[in-house]
Structure formats: C-alpha cells, structure tokens
Image (cartoon, rainbow, N blue to C red):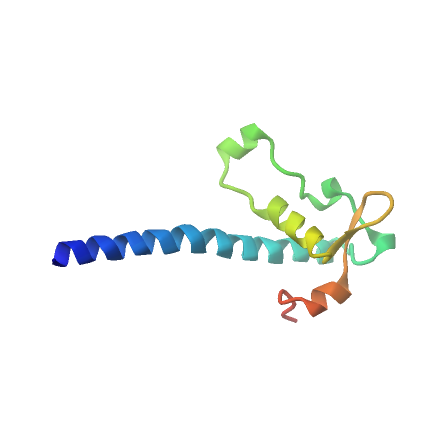
Length: 108
C-alpha cells in the first residue's frame, strides 16, 4: 500500500515538473526579451531594431545541440502575438510600452 502511494506521488511530481518548468522558463525568457528591447532602446517605431541587432535570432541546429534550450525566440513570438512587441513597415521590432503596461508582465 505504501509503495503504491509513493509511486503515485512520484508520477504526480514528474507531471507537475514537466508542465511547470517550461512555463517558468518561458516566463523568465519573456522578461529577458523585454529587457533586451529596453537595453537596446527599441521602444518606439523610430528606434526599432532587427532581430539580429537585438541578438534574438534563433539558434542553428548545431548550436541547439551543443547548448541548453533557448526560450527567447518562442518568447519573442508570444510577445508579438500579444502585440507587446510590434513590427514597423521595415520589418524591425520595437516594444509597445502601452501594451506592456496593460499586460500581466508589467512589474515596474
């Protein structure tokens, strides 16, 4: 009886870890992406930067195999979908302070 309970608890713990860790890593990556935009002063359409200028280009397959997973490209895509990060007519990206302030990500 005790062994079965321990196994069930371990399975539940593994499931929670498999769901919770990626969520926390994505949330952390969103904060890093927002900080990158602020550090590079990409906060309006005139000061927008390219993905390469911001250092947010997704890794190549070889780089991906040699390093830990990088959540920043996925976080950038989520921020674009939420319109917190916007694209100007040149294809450059900038941070929308209005949308950021209205979102749950805004802490300061």
